[in-house]
Length: 189
Image (cartoon, rainbow, N blue to C red; front, side, top):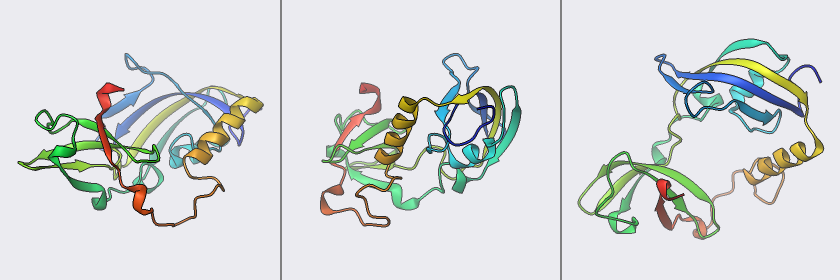
């Protein structure tokens, strides 16, 4: 397999900037790593994945990804006010903290603390890049046919993320047990 297409195993060097030109992430940063994924399974943002089709090892490309093809629009319904007593350390919570909320089914949602009030805390469950236009510079390091194991792992991750044809009904409302009930600091993981 010479070019990026479905079931290609791809390795990319990248630089991600926001629409103001600020570098947000890079494979060249101190703790950076290339993006490694199997094409066609939603393992990277959709707008970037679509723009990579047909590229070969050694190719470079600049890609602009609109919010709806990236991390989505910022959803005000995901800005929540939560009782301060629901936090693991209510007296230590501060703006900028990152937390993980877990449902009874074990599903997790990341949240950032926006504001701390006397009895409550305002959190944002949107992805930090929601609502932002993203600028990627990529260079394809490697393209090859993915192994059966890599394809199976990518397909399983796709299903687990709720994109497959499993039991979840499209557009179904969450049930009464879908409330997030356990909060913990992201740093504790």
